[in-house]
Length: 229
Image (cartoon, rainbow, N blue to C red):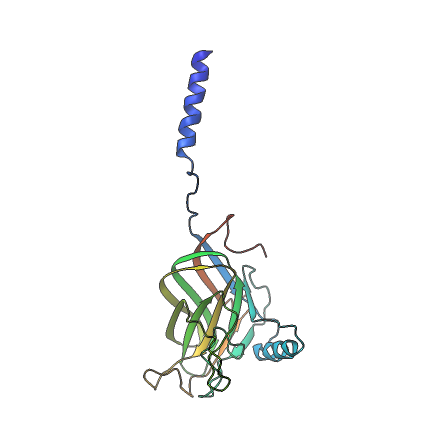
């Protein structure tokens, strides 16, 4: 009997030593956030958001979450470029295709953004990623200086169809939200984010137009950086 007890205690100690030590860091886990929209035309969401904001009930940006699209007809939003406006120096601007997702954890490695686009020619865009933003802006008109720099950013050409944009080697923590903003980028003017011809539309929130964001995130607690949808 004594031998059996000793053997059982030994197995228990070995098993315990193989387990995760107290205070061990969580491993990064894959996360996919799909881009959604409440309306077929994203511009309508901006009008709705503005109206509700004036009533003191802000809607925020369009939503991205872990729920895969089920619709057959995509929503879409234009890449508006009026040279002097909309304001690009905002950490999220509802006049551009912008999405917000609830995320808490540490994101490392590459962020891959899949954007399905429609254009008569190759357009150029910037993809900016912001962490824990409230949509603040810098504005010479109002004197505001609330813009925060993106935690990741990259410019690329986007021919019609599904495009893959990779933002490499990121390393940042996020407490409550992640925001993705897509803006027209420069083709002709070096060092400027302005090109009047850089127009197009982003298509999303449909089975065949599943624009999305993929990354790896180590949760602060639990098994996921994203709350259950």
